[in-house]
Length: 124
Image 1 (cartoon, one colour):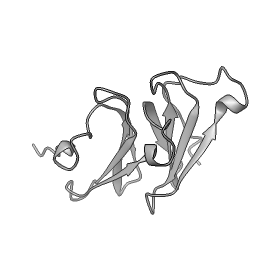
Image 2: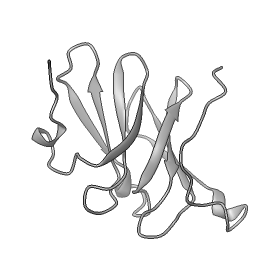
Image 3: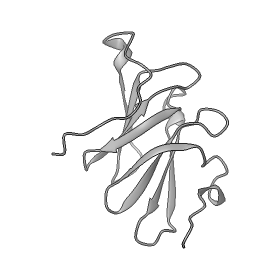
């Protein structure tokens, strides 16, 4: 069996819940590693060695503590859950460049839209 220990890249890379792939990389969803955190890790599915990190909290300090994620083939989406309190900021990042982070704050539509578990795509 081959094991990829993400903590050898960054000791924060533990405590994920959920993941997805674009066929080239696997992405794991940051939830809680002793505290809510926002470092998305992606690893090459072919070589199972290449690891890259996107720290969402560098874009917005609220972007940590997600529970599930999905892709539409172009973007990765992380489902907001609990970052010290339930929150409603969906994070989206480009999977090709793995850097540009966008935020959709659902609580601006309705303050009760926060603390989700899981997500989906229409498959198109």
